[in-house]
Length: 113
Image (tube, rainbow, N blue to C red; front, side, top):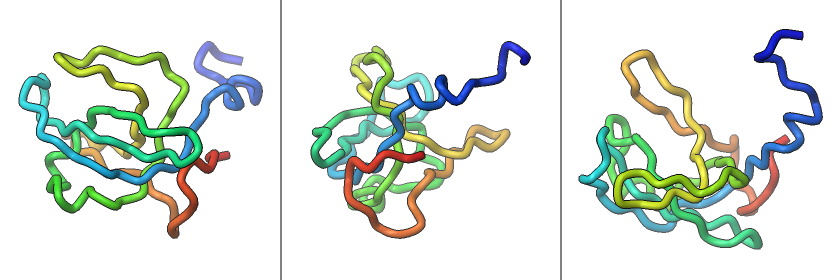
């Protein structure tokens, strides 16, 4: 096994859950263009994060979008903002991020497995 290989037990430690974007703010203090997102994880509460989504998404079109995010990282300071989770997306070579989403609407807080 190489140092990059994960065990099944490693994967089980990562909590990836569904959430709905309920608020979006500009984040001019970020080094790279980004938004501050507020995400509703249902029974798992509301968490905030920043995401570099400005190339493909306008702030108003993100409201109501269901996304997937890692919720069990420790909070991380990003400029003047404390990020509480990590929204997942496919990152192109030029840095453009395409959000990962469920194939159809689901309950907020469901675990991705």
